Structures are given as structure tokens and as C-alpha cells.
Image (cartoon, rainbow, N blue to C red; front, side):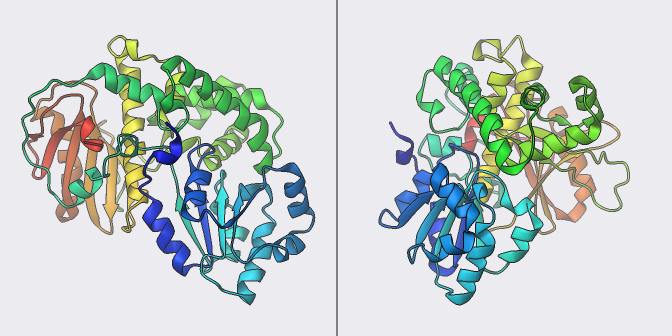
Length: 412
């Protein structure tokens, strides 16, 4: 089974963008399926990859001449390897503003480069493709997020018990199209080689870094601490480097879509809130491999698997959000009383909460404490929430419009 058979929720948004925008940029991690998606949309479109060293050198040596030599409509793959092309593309688009003229893909976040963002403002639409969501992997429509936002959850009593071993393996394989088709042992080998390849090659495309060992150690430490509050001083101390170096390396891993910083939710009047972001390894499979977690340790490494599950849920929600037209903001809530909500979703001023619990049972009164606190903080803007857990039933919590739901609701 090949990755091009998986339905991608982003496909329709990409088609719409190509129909009315001169430059469309598809960003996401390497091996997440960007090239497959781009080529499947327009199989007759010219395709050029900058992973070809000769082409990459030509593009870097003479960006203007390179762009002028391109066909009328072209896909440029891995454009972060020749960032100077984007200025040349701006000039070409200013002369001929044809919709869908340039489809770019990139494995590094070009939007973090201010000059590039400014140069293509109004000319480029950026879309983010992530590793496969579980809805895509199971070939199901991604309805969880819209069901939550529309307030359509209701009580459901399931006839079957949850299949925890299957859930544990899903977390440990993650969502990259290649390893999900392999045995777990082979998937873990792929994860290790993938991280090594990115650190040895892609890091050099965006930063002048020669300390590959420290970079490797940092991503490993972050895997052990996924879904935890970011403590840069602690990381720097464990790595034996300066805080400034650690910050720089964190930014590089973020630009390469290996980690995600989830900001803290706050309103101006909420002075008792913790303002530190959480860090998540983007793919749960990478996190499990780097932290040496196996499905058999679901019970014995309960805390670690709880954090892994939280990162997994966040990634599913990010994937579904990227395919929606709504602009959603994702954060986390934590206050000085240690009350927290793992994911806060905002649409304008509207607020929803998502809690994650590894256990197969819930206390419908006590386990809603975080959502209750968030509802109090958000006031009239609070719209509801869910507690995703390892069980089977959809049950009401002791907070208005809040339900405990099986994790599998993310794709079932």
C-alpha cells in the first residue's frame, strides 16, 4: 500500500488556492506526503526538485535566470534549499499574475524568514501538510473538530471495550506515510534514520550548525519531555551548552517541523496563569522511538504514555484544523493552582477545551475540573469541551456542553 492512496484532507484547499492565487506554498515535514499530493493534483505540470544538487546550485547561483527559464506553470520541490528564488518569483509574478503559476513545497518553515514573508505578501497562500492524521490513515472523514465546534457530541454507550494494544501501537508508529505501512520494529528503524538524515542534511540548509551531536541530544531530550512546559535553562544545563545556543537549536527544530511550541492561553485579566509554552514532538512515532517507549509499556510507563498521548491528540487536532477554512488558535491552559487544560481552541473570541486522559475510565465530576476552570476564565465565550480518554463511551461531564469521549472519536 503506497502513501498516494491515502486521502488528504488538505487536498480541496490546495485545489482552491491554485485556482486563484499565483504562488501556493505547501509546507510540512520531509516525508509527510507533500510531493505526492502536489503531483497528484497536476500530473502534467512541470516538476523540478531542488534536492537535485546540480539544479539547486543553478538556482542559488542565478535565481532570476533560473525563474525566467521555467515553464508557465511549475512545481518547485524543497524550495528552502534556494531561498533566493522567492525574491525572483515575486518579480515574475508582478509581471504576470497567473493563478497557480508556482506551486512550491518546503520542508522548512519559510514564514519564519521576515524578508520572504514580506516579499510575497498578497501573492502567496501558504498551506501546511502534516504527517497522516488517524482519520486519513483509516480513510475516514475528519469530523471530530467540526463536531466539537458545532456542539454535536451526545451520550453514546458503546457495545465493545477499547482496544488498548491497537491504540498503543498507533501512537508508537505515528503518522509518516512510510513507517505506518511497516512493522513496528521497521518503523522505529525508519524514525531513527529519518532524524539522523534531517540533522545531517536539512539543518545545514537553514543554519550554520556543525554540532550535530548536541542537536541529536536535544531532540531526544524533547522526546522524553514531550507535552511538558518548556524549561530552556534545564535543557541547556542537561546539554552542557549556553541558554542562547539551546534557544537557537529549538528554533531550528521548530522550523524543520520536528517540534511544536504550544503557547499558553491567557486573557489580560488572568494574572494567575502560567505563561510558559509547552513543547511537543510533532509526530508521536518519532517521540516514542527517541524516548524508547514500546506499546508493551502502556501500563508500566503510564506517565510517559500519558504525555505521548497528549502530543498525539494535539497533532490530530492540528491536522484537522489545517483543512478548515476557519482560523483557529491552539494554546494550553495552566494556572498557579496546577489546574490545566491540555489544548484550548479559539475561533475569534469563542473558546473550547480539550483534555487528554490515558485511563479507560473517567470520574464524570472530578475529571472535568480543568474544563470547569477554563469555562470560568472564559466566561460567556466558553462553548464547550471534551475529555478524550482510553475508554469506549461518550459521557456527560459536570460542565455544560462538555463530554468524555474515546480517543478513537478523533477518527471514528
